[in-house]
Length: 397
Image (cartoon, rainbow, N blue to C red; front, side, top):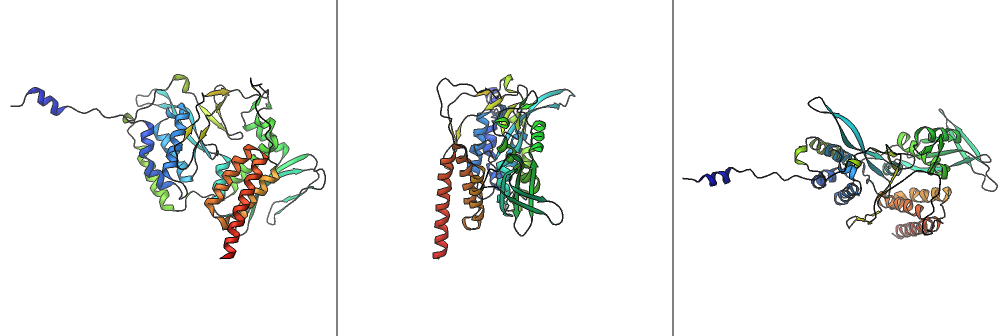
């Protein structure tokens, strides 16, 4: 006859191990791999996603469905989130949610937003454009732009003399197989756009990056509109992958929230943020502060390394704060025409070097741009050397 203690031991239920959002992301790796384009691996994508969450406690507080769904969208588009390349970003939003008992509660949801470099990457990856150009329009330039059945676009910069004051900006692209599209805006249109949409303003005036680099931000605005509204984009090469990825998203929606544990989140972390699309900065919705992210180094064959630096917040202001110790800030900006020529160099040789190498070169150019003109020219020289070798190899063959 069995003892009562034996019966108790036989019928006892083992406690269910609670999973963290990090383990849930790891478990979705097969789904990410189905959605990702061939040039990206699920291992790298997963490492980057986990690093993004570890850097931002507010993302850890988001509902698992919204977070994993946003990551699946990023995977389908082949964009890396919250990295120095600024392809896309995950933003935590606080929303009101109705409970089953009729009451309301505040919850955090993650939303995926592509940044302008991510949109340009999708445009180039579509394989449907031949060239992409952008520049300023000055009073002494020859510029003609006519819409309609017989469109005309002609820009002859006054390189041999003073170009005069800037009066407008444009971004344009030539499509493969014929066709041309452009976004042209006057300086007044750009100013109205900035005052209406950017949060980087004070007392009705632009501050921060819009005040300090108006021309660059104006061109970026034209590029964003061109890439997001007028150019074809690629998500993935195989339609079947999108179908399979959609099945993964359906599985995400069925997650049992009771089995998912969360890291301890402080009340002050549960505030909404948004992405200022003009400045690509993460802004606190309540205070208007710009959150300065940790510096992260991510390499294809190694785990992300987070530089040990406490998170701080900085106020958006035009006043320049003096550091305790003088820091080097004499980074020579890269002229627009140099950037344009570099992108043309890569774009024109895309059939020779392939989509993956071209994408890597664009990423290197973006990083070099932040380091100043000398580093940018060095990177361009390395790209030219590579292209020359490929051209020679092709001719020898």
